[in-house]
Image (cartoon, rainbow, N blue to C red; front, side, top):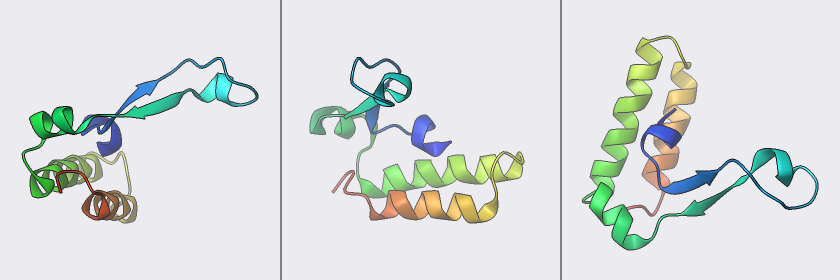
Length: 81
């Protein structure tokens, strides 16, 4: 998934919180400096996400509608702005 292949946060698989948090973990957004080192600008971030989504559709991992939703979410994000 582009959300993992083109990350904008650390995903932590363990959590000591109450309830379902113990099973699901949590994420911590990357700082601005790290995001800038990964993606020069918003367009590059969206382009990377779109490429991953297209590859996943071609490989049969996700449906075109899901790829479009994921790419739209990247386009609407504030990453690189």
